[in-house]
Image (tube, rainbow, N blue to C red):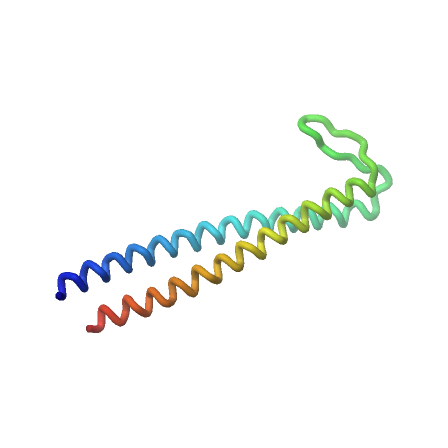
Length: 111
């Protein structure tokens, strides 16, 4: 019986480690999208005072209509923020799952 408990506990510990790795991966993704949102927000701020606006397409800088560029940047920012929110939801779910698993493991180890 104790051998089964040890195996079960080892499996739970492995699952917990995988959850922690997934959480770390999500945190890195979230930071990437937060950076994109911040960069885009800064670009939108710079557009307000600009007389001429340009957009880089491939290796070429092209003159671009200010309102169209604002629309593109706002859309890009909204998309990045939406991805951050989705990642935060997933992260919260995984953290809750990890917490439950951790309590279960601690309970098994105390026996």
